[in-house]
Length: 319
Image (cartoon, rainbow, N blue to C red; front, side):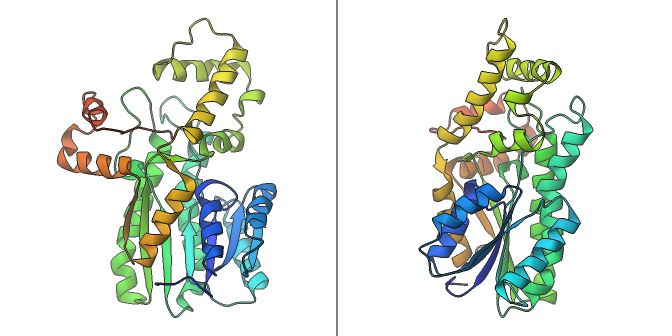
């Protein structure tokens, strides 16, 4: 698929971050786009950014962890674009949370897993018949560096997100041969970003009921423990100061990232045009991929972080 002009793309999580930038750049390339997100306001902002492009950009509020909502989104795409096919499916939606399988609540763990993995599965199931009706089509699944390294370092648990992203990676790789055998006109790309400057930390907290301004005393106490384990000196800090630390960390993840969402979207779309099935996004992703492959048995040792730190300009983000 060398050109997106005249094509129809579906983008989940298109209201913010990489999803918004994928929508914007696809529209600029002459591609019609159907977006879903949990925030109508965010999608309206994305839509406004595409207003000058001579394409149709439709929106639908849908939570990809809910199969009925995914199916309603699929039906809305058919109606809004008067079509029986799509050409591109970007399974981009994701949240971070449920860090510890041992200490965190099951509800948060399950929600994170169901969005990050279940959303990819459900959307691919729902839209596969429409992809099959296209002359050429591509599924683009967003995993993460945490799809090959299930860690943020030795002082933080990261189980739900990592498990989900490993599932996305395995599913995508398994589809390569499955599609070749049973639907050779449909291809798959696996996207593995490093630290990209998005609002995923801020948005995830809102979705999971952990918005700092609304957190209970118990939630703040749990956050205090996590912050201290991550190496931030917050002993003696008031609850209000903990709230501010959480806000600052979310903003820093977005603003201090080594790559912007727009830059990441460009790398992804260039990879799709080049028909690559494996798309690493960011120098940090490339470095970490190499280090894990070189020493898989040592990838979770405490001193592995020293090897990472020795690589120039490498930064580990969250989630």
